[in-house]
Image (cartoon, helix red, strand yellow):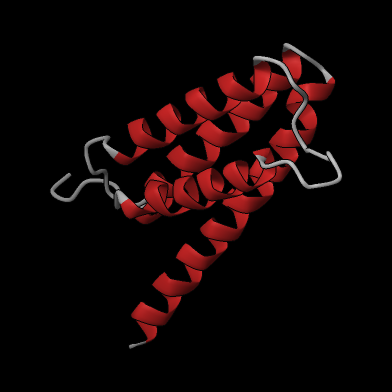
Length: 122
């Protein structure tokens, strides 16, 4: 029971981090193009791969990737007043495409043992 609660807390924290990385990436990638885009994509890839290594499951990358993707899609929608978080340029499309690709790649990596547990039998 306690293990399931801890696992749920880790996945919830990864989802919150996915939302935060999406918001930070939306601000950074447009401000310092192209280095901001690279920084935002590096943050995405680090979160997704780190989630896989932390949990040792594919859901460790899938949960933050899904939260990131939903947040980025929500941020791309314009409001009736005309406000938008992303500039009208090709950078946001690269952010969305390459970030989603990084999430899929991290989620489909071979399953590794969680960080710190190592391989058994050594």
